[in-house]
Image (cartoon, rainbow, N blue to C red; front, side, top):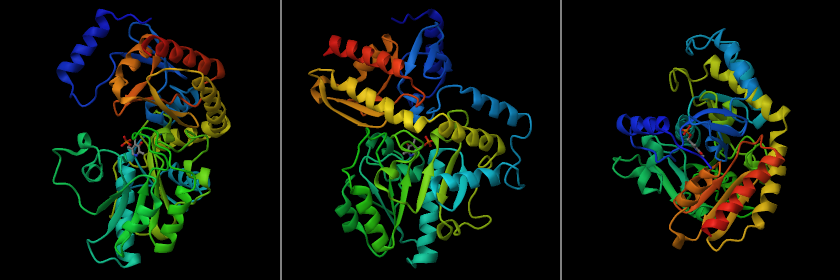
Length: 406
Ligand SMILES: *Cc1c(COP(=O)(O)O)cnc(C)c1O
């Protein structure tokens, strides 16, 4: 059981008095992390089952990433894209080899990578496909999550993300997630792209029916529409494959990556695409001061090596199966359904239970950090370095809390 002292209470009060109120965190004040574990200021230890929304797939404070960060910090951290660095070429080459797409444009946050994708698709529409100026349409999905910029929230279907932030950006058509025929029906001569999470993360680990992604791929190819996959959360091992699109053997026209791309050490994101699409960017048309900085790229290159050399994709698969077996044994009236792919798990509670917050608070008291997603869902997504005995430990805590709360 965790204890809370006046020192954590004081830090919480400072935050509440001087910080913006745009999150609703659990009252756990963390100060240290290592692998799957984190510690609060009172010395309580927790198993992190959120992994910073998959940004720390490699585990907290991975020694190799700290090494890469400190080594590069002593050489060169930022010189802007006005000059070249020795990190950019190798970084781009390594990512093209990993993704099978031809060219890479680095940014910082996930939202910026998605903004880059939107700009690329629109310009491709005007210069290659021949769409009349300012008429480009992009098809997106209900319950999508692609970030928080003004343009991106313009096509969110979540009122909390959108309300009060208008005027919103036009040019998006929203169809039900996982409905390939709805995509086909929404395409017009002005459609330039379909922007899709292969599995919806923030939406609550929503997994489309098998065959959906390959059907959407066929439709996009037939209609000369780009298929852009946002794998910022689903990519880099989370689903038990390096990329979620590998479950369907689909090749996207472009990809956005972020989060685990730098293992929680530093914000790095990318837009990756083939030549025809990337060529729409010319000097001056897009950029970012920190985008592609050598410090971020050195960390990111090491983060990708860690994923491969430590077999984290395979581990996501195996530990995912272990979770699956353990969760199947939990019997609780409150559970509506469990959705899972790889090490990405959503335990959805029946709505009459009144929300998953209470379960998350009780789990934290047991030493397991989860966070409710969309009120009714407990998301379990530990770092991909999790070990078999840690999975058993987590299952034990889940069993205890469901036994107590039903
Ligand atoms: C988190 C996320 C983003 C936004 O990333 P930020 O780094 O928070 O801007 C975009 N798309 C998906 C699918 C995400 O999960």
